[in-house]
Each structure stands twice: as C-alpha cells, then as structure tokens.
Length: 317
Image (cartoon, rainbow, N blue to C red; front, side, top):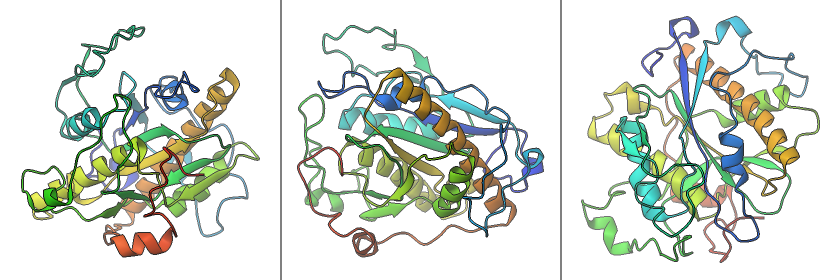
C-alpha cells in the first residue's frame, strides 16, 4: 500500500483515500446527500473515461493514466452523526488507524438503525494518503471545496441539541484537544490545482468552486478536527514524521438535494474530484513540494470577508 513517505508516482503500489459523509439532521432534508453520495462510491477509482477538457488551467498538466497508481477508496461505513462529541471522538481514530465501533453509542436516540451501523467495528487503513470529508450545504446548486477550517465560533446546537462547550479559557489548558492549534488552518493540498483538474474531468456545466467559509457547524468542525489532529501530531513529532508533515485533507460541500438524479450526479462528480486530488497530490510529492505556511486567523478573515461573523445558520449562502 502506498504511504505518505512515497514521492514519485511509480513508488505507489496503491493510493488510499478515506471518505466520510454525514447523517441526516434536518427535518426538511430527511436524507443527507453527503452520505448518499459517499456510500455509492466504488472501491477503486475507475479508469478515466475522457481526456481532461480545455477548462483546465493552461499551467496544469494532468498526469497520464499510467502515472497514477491504483486508487483505493475506503468509505467510513456509516454516516457520521451531526454531533460535536461524536466527531471529536471519531476523527483521531481515522488518522491513527484505531479500530472503532461505527456510531460509538451516538445512535442511542430511539432511531431505527436501518443500516445496521451501530456496533459495527471499523479499522481504518494503516496508511491513509488522503481524507475527503463530504457535507451538505444549503439550498444551492454548486459544489465547493473548502480552503480553511476554523477553531472557534461554533455557537449552533448539534442534532442532539448540544453545544460544543469549548470556551476561551480552554485554550490555555493542555488537556484541550486543540491546545496550541492556530485559530485557522488550511489544507496542504493544492486546491487551485485540484479545482483546475476537477473542472477538466467533470461533466460540462458543473458548477465547481473553492470556498473560504465552511460555515461554523459540523462541516467546518470535522474539517478543522482533521487539520488540527495532523497539526498537533506534526508538532509532537517535531516535524520529523512524514505521516503528519502534510495536512492531506479536503472538505467538499454538496448541494442539499438528495433525489436519485442529484445523488448520481454528485457521485460522478466526487469520483472525478478524487481523481483530481490524487493526480495533484502525486505530482506535488514527485516535485518534492513542501507544506505551505499555516493560515493565520487574520489571513483567513481577509480572504473571506464576514467569515468570522456568526450568522445563526448551519450553512453559508
């Protein structure tokens, strides 16, 4: 299996992408398209069906199919509950390869367990090359890759009517999960390059964007949780462990509609997104790219006017 120590594409035996999707949490949206899309993904990335279109950046050269290793897609086998503590507990187990029970007790709410998810043990792959979290955006039609995850400002209650409960005083407590972590973090993936590739691979007319505001709800929370876990592991290893040197995380917001047609369209777009992420990352490692600097809270705010303003909504327009 491939690992983050590998650089040239030919050194990868297999590139592993872990994908998560969320459970339903709004009565007006009884199905969460992020999970409906994730659960339908293939176990391996299929062969490219068409050549990248001219919409890709002129400075971006997509690797030939032979230069990209086999890509294994591992989907976390249950929808992630829209619950702060469930996410905070789950994310470290995904990155550290710790066996965990799907749901972890988070479904003890009287709901029918239609998918047999509760109690199923999941062991994450030993070497994860990249994680893609998928979440539901509001009533809009575009798909957005999120650039920045944020630590603070989670004032909305989760699906279990619970607040996150973090306070400014926690920042000085070494026991806090995000102790020493900056207020904003960016992925080390080259999202501009990924977007150019994605637009080239996707169906014509697909509205694909980069966003700098993930919304300060569970989508933002799971994204920052992954980024923060890798940040802390890198700090603990004194920047000497290649597994944590690059924050290999992406977050995708998908439209809220979960009709069969929209889910299938979303599934096809996510397949091409995974292709684009892998191509970009293989090229970056082959070129010996080093991680970019951490995003500061000030820089993140400047990039997204109003991003630090709490709106009282679970999504951004």
